[in-house]
Structures are given as C-alpha cells and as structure tokens.
Amino acid sequence: MPFKLTAQHLAAIAGRSTPLMADLAHWMNQLCPQYEIDTPQEFCHFLAQACHETDHFVTLREYASGRAYEGRADLGNTQPGDGGRFKGRGIFQTTGRANYMQLGIKNGRRDFFLNNPELLEQPEYAVWSACEYWRTRGLNDIANHADSDVLKKKYRGKIIDVSPVEYISLAINGGYNGMDERKKFYAKAQQVLVEPAAGPAPRVLPTMPAKPKKPAKPARKKTTSPARKLAAPKLVTAAPEQDKSIHSGTITAINGHLLTVAMAKGKKQTLQTSALRGLKPGVLIAWCEEDCTRLCIGERWTRVKSITPVRR
Image (cartoon, rainbow, N blue to C red; front, side):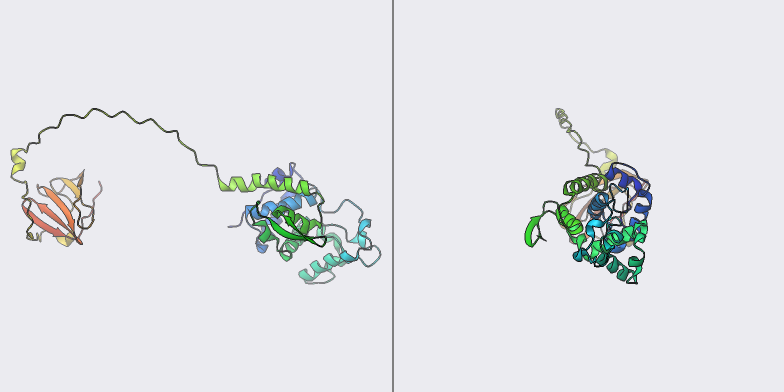
C-alpha cells in the first residue's frame, strides 16, 4: 500500500503550517503513486525539494517578476514577455516557455499551459507538473540510493561526484541555489517520515542474575507398589504381537494419562503426560523405530503409526 502523506507531515518538515498543505497532501496522495513515488524514502527527497521551491509550502508562484528570464533561449523564452509570463510555478517552480509547452503536450494539448500558465498555481497541476518532471529526469532511482552513495552528475560541462540529495537538487534547480536548505529539509523529512515508519527500536530487557542452584537432594530408592507390579512390562526385543483393539494407529490415553512420543527415527524418547480420563490401567513405554512407533501396554507390545495428542 502506498505511503499516505498528511498536512501534518508537511507542517513538521516545513516547521510551520500553511493553508496550502491540506490540498497539496491530498493531490500528492492521488498523483504521486501513479509515478511510483510512494515510499517514505522517495517522499523525503520529493518533499525536500518542494519545501524549498515553495518557500515552506507557502506559495506556488515565484515571488520574483520573472524579468530575469527574459530572452533566455535555454528556457525557450523567445518572445517578448516570456520571462514574466512563464516564470516559476508549481511545487518545483516550472519555468520557461519550453517547459510549459512540454507539460501541455503531456496533458494532451500543446498550448494548454501556454495559454493558461496560471493553471500551474492550482494544487492539482502544481503537484502533477512536479511528478512529470521527476519521472522524465529519472529521479526516483536516485532517491532510492543510500545517502552515502557517491553518484556522477554532469554540471557545467564537467562530471562531478555528488550525493543523492545533491544530484536531485542540481536536476531541479540547475545549480547550488538553496542547497543547504534542501539538505536540511531532507534530513527533517527523514525524521518525520522514515524513522517512524521503521518503528521503535526493540526494547532490551535487563539481564536477570542467575538463581543460585539448590543443593541436590539425596536420591530416593524407587519402589513399585503391589498394585503396579502386575502391570510393569517386560522389556523384550522380539517382534510383539499387534494389538488390533487400537484403531487407526491412534493412542489417546493410558491409565488416565495422555502419553505422547516424538517421532524421531531410531531414538528412544522421553514421555510427557497430561491428566486426562482415558482407557484401562496400564503402563506405556514407547520408542520410535524406522517409520512407526512401538508401544508397550501392560505386557503386550503394540505397533501404531502415530499418537494423537488430546488437549484438556
């Protein structure tokens, strides 16, 4: 099941609560799983970038006028006024005519956002535009790298070594603008999303001191009561006669006790008993031989396939 975000998650990461957070959390839960952004780790990177780009989830439109982008051919701003018209919008601050046009193509109409750039200020399109950018740049794979991994990234014509959070920041911003804050938001997202999801550390119980051993009691000489002497079996090795009175190879109880035998091949077993009303008096001795269990009831040996435990 995809991880579910709440407005409280966003507020904890940003360090404040804003009116946009409820709508943004709703649309992230609706749209992000469609782009395979659905684990706490992936959301940590996604939200760290969004939190910086939106000024702590305060705005979905760039504060600046956009004049600085005027005439920027790398952004596709080839017409007068493109800088201000296509300034940063959405949670990743989509910027430039070319990027607005690409989003329109993804949405089904080339001029959809060119004619209506303000639509990217709506929470639904603000989140959707970021998801599209995230997928086209392959950032989900980067987000699943360990923080200690060293990745290669092309920057200003050179291949440099970067961490995963630096890689994603460069892919979204194009430079090191706000890098320290992006890292801070990522670390905070880890505390808010990843650590609680992992659950609390197991509680270590204190080691109890060993109880002192009691002195051994002198051994008692075992005696057999007259009533039980008659029932004591003779241990024989000859193949015994099979008792057909025991049906389906099942013994339930002997002498008022349930007797169970573990089915270990060729090994004598210790018997365990639990009080039950059972069959006629007798003494049960048993061991396993090959794939069957041999029982001695009174002086008669019985061969059965299994012993069925009976609970109280």
